[in-house]
Image (cartoon, rainbow, N blue to C red; front, side, top):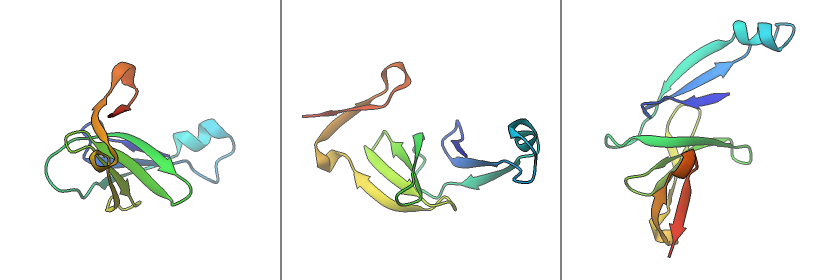
Length: 102
């Protein structure tokens, strides 16, 4: 599974040991790797979702209202400009990302 580093500048991949018997031993012997995210600027990324249809990890730049699709190497390969789709602002009430469309 994947985690977005709290600083928003790298991905953390946790790969359970496929040869371990049971979930707990598999996680205790998991392989953890850190993948730097290659995006322009110093903006912080927030949120992380996996899309099994295209195999990309999606995260958002709140400052530009941009949704980025990242490959497993941390490269931004897809960009969706949410502002051009009518999103005027993004809010994070109670930890849930929501958008406002006018």
